Image (cartoon, rainbow, N blue to C red; front, side, top):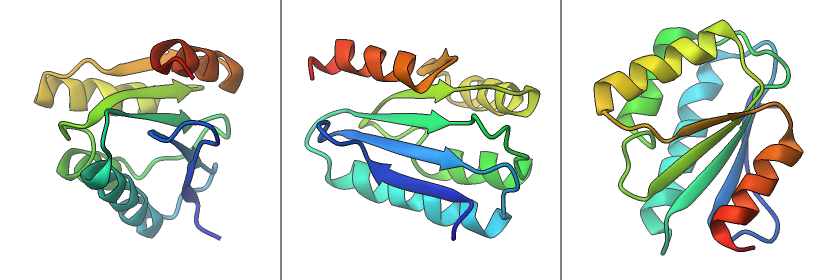
Length: 125
């Protein structure tokens, strides 16, 4: 089973859930970001991605930053990243990506419920 997975969020046609396990295989990072990019490329509207970091993942830093930057992070259809949970590496990755792109579209939450409430408020669904 992949250590980084992407799935559609039921009831939201333009929202995805990205889930990171604690032990991340760097070979799973690229396909996950590519799946998000493919979704963005065909999405009729702006897209939200809820990112579940509750397992306190050990990110492969270079691979994560490279794949995010090369694909979905700066995509014109990428509305926001709704990140649940946090660790020092996640904050460093976000800081790097926002500095490089100038985008400030990452929002941090403590629980999935908080992120889903924010998503519903933003999308009206």
